[in-house]
Amino acid sequence: MIDVNLAPGNDKQPDGQWTLIIDRLPNPQQAQGVFAINMATNKIAPQLVLEVAVGNESMPQLTITDLNRYFGPGTGTRCWIGLKIFKTTNGNHRWWAGIAYRARAPNGTLLDAPDTSPESMPIVASHNTPITTPTNIIFHVDVATLIDPCQPPPNYPATFNIDLEEIRRVIVQWI
Image (tube, rainbow, N blue to C red):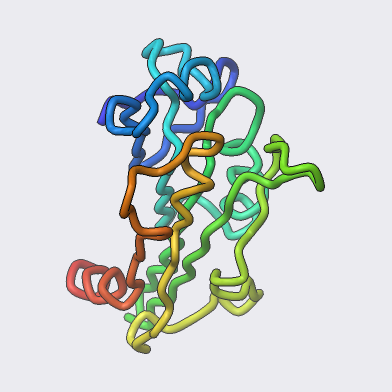
């Protein structure tokens, strides 16, 4: 991964990013000119980004300010996954995980705004969920949204799934 800003004038950099590989689409010519180009790399901007915050961002910063920056004009972001770890000195660590997509107008046009998915953990003022509590949350990342207006390859799954229990276990192991 190359560290690059999302768009000119936007100093936000994702902790992880994934970009569409046009050559793998059934009709690569459909993708010509429909995806945002990252000005720093002159390549297609990431469609899926991951943001992990431990000590440097509050929930409002992560879920309002930063989230809006990821879906700002020219970013190309189609899906955002955010994790917030509330690390404490007493070992009572807590966490939050959320997923958002680029919002759509009633006619289906992609907008420069986020639409947080109901699969996200609720945002609460009490520092969210204990990291020691197992979860059964799975984020179902919608492939069609990532590659719209292009068609997915034949026999490609409609979603790819991110099991938050697996992520929680890794966090517990390393926190």
